[in-house]
Length: 291
Image (cartoon, rainbow, N blue to C red; front, side):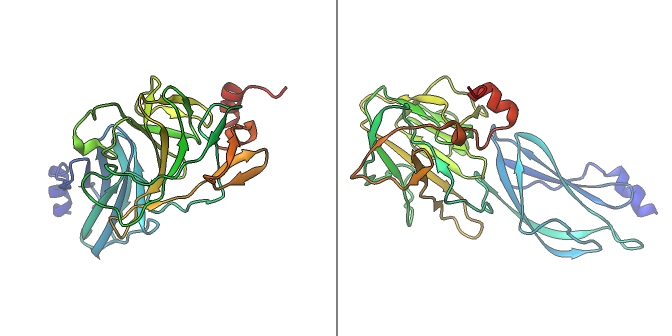
């Protein structure tokens, strides 16, 4: 019992992770259980991966691999329960942090809206370079979608998401908080845990952590730009490489297509697609009642 009294006295003892964006804390309670929590010091959500080794006097009962979405600030994680009549839990662990969910299973048939004003006609355009997206580092492979555009063209969200970065002509904040090194770009975290970056877009009064709905105006094409570049991607657990997703866009009612540079498309934003990731309350507020 004395050892537990000592643990109570030192209940504020914790382990901090060297990463600056996320700090993990492990505290013992009065019965010897170890309670884990994490503080996300970023202004936007992060994903935490924890991997345990050399567990003694306890069992890790969470689903593996363990990945937890962390909102900015304090987040409760889990408890390592002490075995009855055993010493306190002992363990080693490693953590990794990600901007997107590295365990997300992507629905490649999800319908994305062409991100221009409904009723207009647009052409897809080949993206030959994403220079500067990942700084001086080179990506082994990448996929991007492009559309011919003119400065001032309105840009709409292709899917629901949360605003995680708004980059103007000059990158703000410290590099630690950047999602990429592009300027004039808006990045959203999508409901499936992937990121979507709209390049050559000037934000339309957006704020970090603002919820965006499919078909919502998010900005306009930046001055001097003649292409809208779209990258949809996610992190990987076992490698630093990014996975890029080729989306299917809504090209007509009940019709999806991977856009073709040889074709012209009439932009449609069906309410049935816009409302796919909305609650009933959001549908009433954003889309309105059916006529």
